[in-house]
Image (cartoon, rainbow, N blue to C red; front, side, top):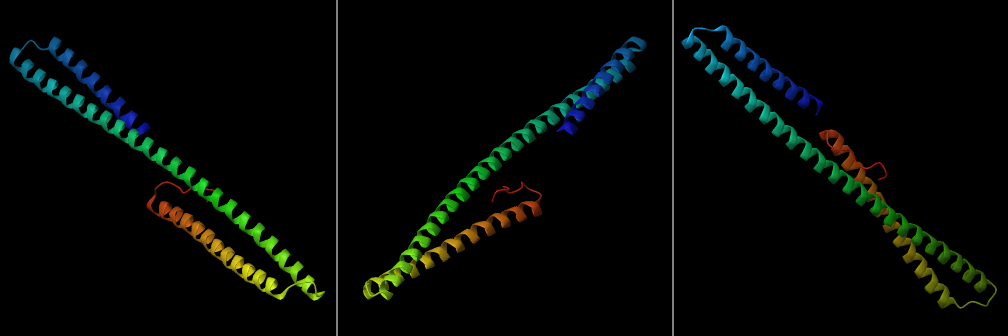
Length: 170
């Protein structure tokens, strides 16, 4: 952006120089025909510089707008990624707590069965529930791995294309 401002400053300086030359030429020339030709050339140069300056300012505004839009998009993606990671973490923690409790209950049922107090069909139901919970935990682990892989892939793609960096807390 500083480069664009430097270019605008340079254009403004050239316009000022052209105006100074124009004023000097008008004062120094007594020959009407040559002065008119040079004056027309200087006016054309001045118009060209004004046009170039205007185009540079337009491009600078366009680039600034694009940059702002990209920054907003990146921030929205970061927030979305942080929310997703937070939800996934909460779900995984809840699933793991439930599985620990289920394993503890099954252990208590097995101990009760050893002493002859438990009922075998309840133990079988409990074991089936524990197996299902373990399968669900495995699926959750795979989902977590997929989410991490997606974040890493996005970061690598962004780095390879020179684009925006992926969120750090993926």
